[in-house]
Length: 340
Image (cartoon, rainbow, N blue to C red):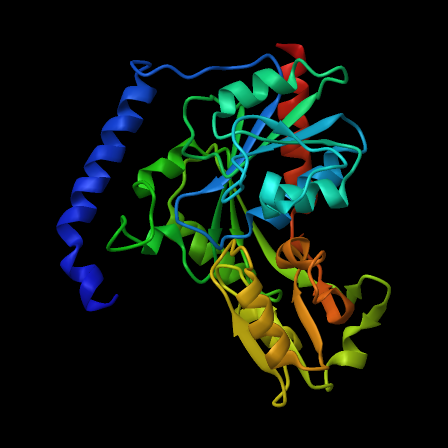
């Protein structure tokens, strides 16, 4: 923890007090939450950024869209539109935000919507001609004006919320007690060979309620990179000199998976909108080399002048163990909603 964050400790106490009062008011139904007669699954975290929400949402889309009509609803962070927007063929990352646009590009058979007001967003989705049967709320753990039926809380292996503190001293949006709302906690970005003993140690540290389940996942990188007209295996590109480009919260694992000593890594802020000046900088550094970026950045860059040398590396969330238990818990919740 750096000196500035230590000096801001009194503000962290104040921020924690304010968020605790807000949660208390919602818990006691003094501040009202809206429930819906449809399964609503919220995926989020207690800390700011970088816990792997996007691959976890994509896991749920793949799993559930085989059986149900699925919709995702996101805030659409840093988008240039306002209000409720339902993705269609004219949409782009500026209209939807990068992550929702990525969902739309990869899963064209689901509804992808954005609205900062999640209550209105769900209401609008339910007026569509083809109504969703399940709604996935992206990054909505603190959006308590909607009462989801099922909460999935993500926490990174290297940055557990149990070891963190409130903003601005730490990175927590609300106190650690907020984890009590979760039905499931997923420890993300684990080493793929994480031992059962280490899993048990983390489980003890999280100190969850008996009714809550804990799962462990790792980020699984694709064996290939993808361009507009070409697919190249990572093994064939690994030793080639290239520019690695990322505008995500924690890019180090992405760089480590691809880089060699000849590569240059270029980092931008999370959800960065690339300006003409940025594109010039990238192009000047890359020269005639391939540019490999994240999938989230690619959706913002694929219409740019970089496209002829631009590639992206897909990722997915993979369970270390007990994947079937996770799937069963989700399906049991959905079935229970149908019986209610």
